[in-house]
Image (cartoon, rainbow, N blue to C red; front, side, top):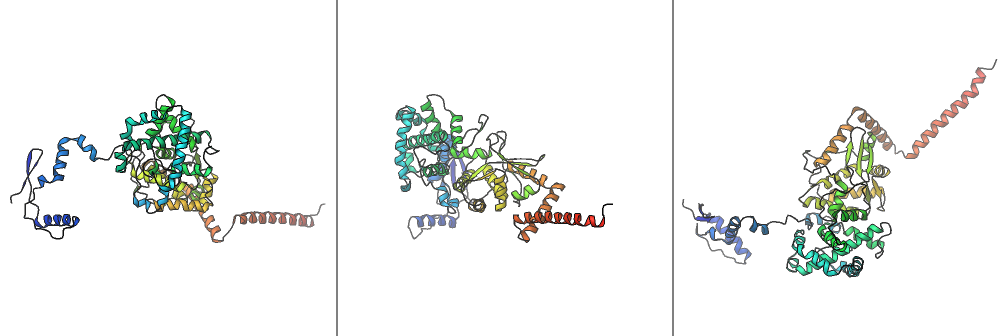
Length: 480
């Protein structure tokens, strides 16, 4: 059956005519969108698809090569994402700034406007301390303004058209953030001298929101202007880490960090010699809690220094090393934003942070597990409430964020080593004995005071026996 001829790239291709019913259905949908009720039937083969605007456009892109196709691709630099409704519908407040906006996504919201006024005051302080005119900072960011826009995955059209306004926003927010980090680094325990403790906590919480990030390039360029030298990437990284209480005795080698949230993520899971990969562990399984691991002879150890191996298990001595975590009222928001970034970003360490949080969720199943982790200095309860509140927090993380791949290659190594160590005969016997003792205590509703009562009773029994023995022995065995 003869078909229409479509020319593409100078070559004629024969195609079968579109079926009458399909063609009419396409036009019917189009007319419904345009508000037309009746559809004029189309004769078979009457549409010349080679002249359709969309087909011509795609054909032109194929001939023009990669240069013309770039505008149809997402920017490879994108790293600041809008959190999808899939996550926001479960806990919208966790992704929304409460005190201050950084960048374009939340700029101009009414409840954040009071801090916008403070930004201008602090900009004057920053300029006086740096000794550089404001024009110098604009001149430093202007050549890379398009690169800065490309970092944002969902930039509104208003910012694409208003380059001057976007540049002003980057300078103002960048100077403000750098001023905050400078002051927090110099006064880590006293808060910011120009802000109250509540405002300081709110700003630091908002600084770790995915939608509230500034490209690290902004901070590097601004710092370069004020120090009059080369970009100081390691200096900016150390500034951020000191603001959140992280430290390292050795020089940092954390690679290129995209923004503050990305840097914070790497402090938890970074391993210089490790390359992230998606693991193939099969279906999820039930893992042991912290108290069950310790009952099997596994010791828990905190990792304080960043450049140490943060998450590891030594099967020789049974030591599980984990990052030290301070749990406070911002922890849930921070972890949810880390999970969102982990799932949206295409880059290094894919899924590793989410896998680590899932691992923590399995360790923390009861207040007893929390108590074990606190006593081993892995968790610090920083005013969040009871141990039960921490259990509920980690439980909410698994409910409010999809764990797409709980077993990445790094965590699989940890799982396997623990599994092997835990299933050694002597460790299984030890764990089983502890389980029986625990089950008996639970069934009889014993309290910790019961142990002291038993010891006291045993001691009284021994003393009573000795007293009776010394009393009766001379009677039956008198001295000669």
